[in-house]
Amino acid sequence: MLLEMAAHLQLSVGSPLKSQFKLTRTFSISTHKWANIVRCSASTAPPKRSYRITLLPGDGIGPEIISVAKDVLKLGGSLEGIEFEFKEMPVGGTALDLTGVPLPEETLSIAKQSDAVLLGAIGGYRWDNNEKQLKPETGLLQLRAGLKVFANLRPATVLSQLADASTLKKEVAEGVDLMVVRELTGGIYFGKPRGFSTNENGEKTGFNTEVYSASEIDRIARVAFETARKRRGKLCSVDKANVLEASMLWREQVTKIGSEYPDVELSHMYVDNAAMQLLRDPKQFDTIVTNNIFGDILSDEASMITGSIGMLPSASLGESGPGLFEPIHGSAPDIAGQNKANPLATILSAAMLLRYGLGEEKAAKRIEAAVLETLDKGFRTGDIYSTGSILVGCTEMGEQILKSVDSRVLC
Image 1 (cartoon, rainbow, N blue to C red):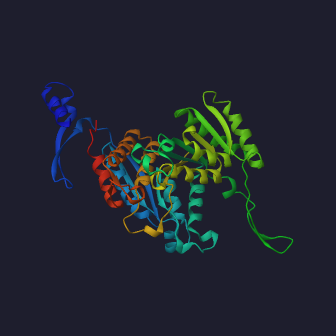
Image 2: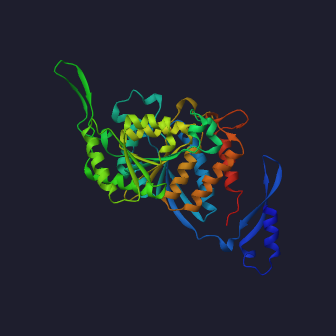
Image 3: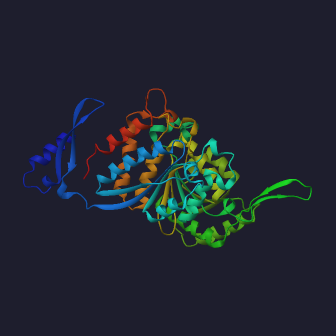
């Protein structure tokens, strides 16, 4: 098909299309054959744009998956006229070992000055016994607060290539395409008072506070309604309004904001029922909006519908400033450094960075299409492997994605 297209273009003497394409040949290391690729000529290449990206590899498998995603981001961007200036900084356990704190001031400062932030993973067994303020995860919470990113978008889509990898029956999982919009900087993870005390019986107690202001709820609700409006026009707000006062206010405010979006169908669901419905009939959901802790749990549950938590990206956005983009999986220290990690969630997070962080839709679509093409070819890391597919490691999966990114008609 590419040869036929190139031949047609070359024969069209005098046509303005002729100057827009050129036929090049590239050698494939895997097949030991030459391939023909139609590329845009330099004269029609889009103007160069430049962005500063802060890379936070973090812990465990973080450095491996960030390395792969950086290469994909760099190539995909360059083919769309985008240049990146990357700055790598420590965070989490790595930062603890280097500086004694999980989020160094310099790391946060560099992140704030960038156009977007791409994070790998945070945490590991070696820091589990640290005091709370010296845990890697505290650095992540501080990073989100420091960047003032309050809206976390977590898509959960069952790709047709991986429908059999889901733990649910194929007829239940196939076709699932939902988005969890999670409030990220409020609720019980940040509420005060919190801490430890002693009760009247002399027993040690631990306590946290689930608290939201009306304005915090309103702003995440608007993000969710706007997201639903761009999808299929359905929004389900998840709470525990039959028990919790914070949830009662949540439902009241979401309903109020809903009057501004008559084109979006709003429903409400208790969190325990939502957890059950995600497994019973996940296709009923389009967009879900919920608080910090419920969103943390439900989005992880939704990830397993897709077949692997290693497939799901996320975007954390604020009202201004750089967004934070990261896979939703953890640092997987048990497989760190073994070339077993699945880099696809991080690569797809890089695509979300392009779309939501930089407004570069074409480059985002290029990378997403490359992921689908690579899966179509049968390449799988261990977490999504099934009989008949091709088992590859983190590095080779990245190499296959790069081939797909660079083997497409670029105009």
